Image (cartoon, helix red, strand yellow):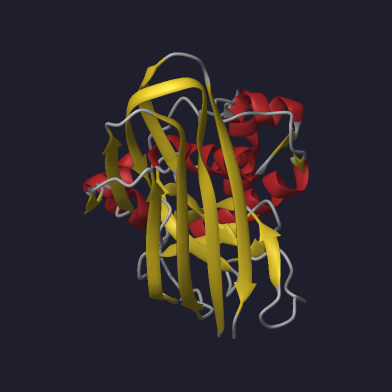
Length: 281
């Protein structure tokens, strides 16, 4: 068991003056299997009333508007979460069973459909089908795909952006966690396995001392379904454990961005982000 405190500070700076802005934040974790939220709070500056709801994919959303002129929008999400490792249950689901369940339930159908960000190129489809042919079950196929993709795509910041597609990342064999998750999700879906994109946080230093604050960042990984949802971090080639904090699920990044919005005003906007993570237990 571990207890993590996360402080996520982000927002937009405007070159001119924004006279109004309308925004959504997905920065606060929710209770989940193996994850208990002890506290969570979102501070917004300039102060704004928020409408809190859970979206279609089960993610907590804070929707708000700022109707006074402002040159900067700043959000600070502070959460304390208790985490316990989740053991993957043994499943006997075969390909026929999976196809029957996935084809009859809306949530699984939606996680089988490719999106513009996850659509795989032909050689990645071939990799997925080869893994399926060499494995005996959907679960073993999924793990094989995750490990092949994670081993092939190098973590390299600065070569991609939030609009980069899985096909582009796969061609470059490089990207960040968001890209590696998109490539993996696309390959899993190509093999006929429902897969979803997960956003959250990862404590980057398992050797950190108690109450030592380290610099972190938002993180992305994947989950696949083969009788139960299984999580895996293909960027780091590790199972989901007591360093991963789930914030949201979706078909791809566009369903779970930490902050997005529109504004009225002159000049461009720039995003700033800092994440600090402290292990408290």
